[in-house]
Amino acid sequence: GGKGANQAVAAARLGATVRLVCSVGRDPFAEEALAGLGNVEVEAQRVEAPTGVALILVDVQGENQIVVAPGANALLETVELGPSDAVLCQLEIPDAAVLSAREQSSGLFCLNAAPARPIAVEADLTVVNRYELESLSGRAGLIAVTLGAEGAVLLEGGEEVARAEPPRVEAVDGTAAGDAFTACLLVSLLEGRERVEALRRACAAGALAASRFGAQPSLPTAAEVDAILSG
Image (tube, rainbow, N blue to C red; front, side, top):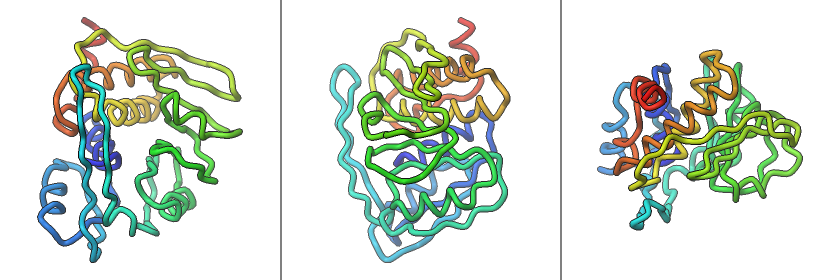
């Protein structure tokens, strides 16, 4: 897993053509991680460091605590990107890699600003939870704030421009819910959907992921999102 890999798989399952740029070690963890990416195109930098891993603890309410050993992720400094409709980054990689991606972005640049830390990069779309929002100061562009079981809001210029609630599900594991939300919001906006519809679909994707165990195995397809919204 990891945010980048989860979001790449999530976007691919929703119908997007995806290329993942990442850094891995030369160990069995790397082979296992890469093998699980399905039809995601991968450009993996092999480095002399252990592949990043995460320990995830989930309670009976489906809430999780995650301990990350970044390993090879911390050595990803620069990336080479071609033309694309969008670039999605998160903060499990160094600032230098995020800034490199931003400079080369030819389309919509989306930043999942998690784990929270200050970073001087402008994004067209920033995705955070309500706690990570506190680390953003005067950020321009569209900001999506996830609110757990309450859904999510879109902010622009400090004002709420859209709000959506998730469908009711029994949450068992929220590990990849945020990744499903982020990917679905971005894909939906790229498809030309109205903001409130895109936010509603993203909330549904996050809810579906939270209703299943695991990270990448929990990520829904576009058909599953359609089904839960029409049910």
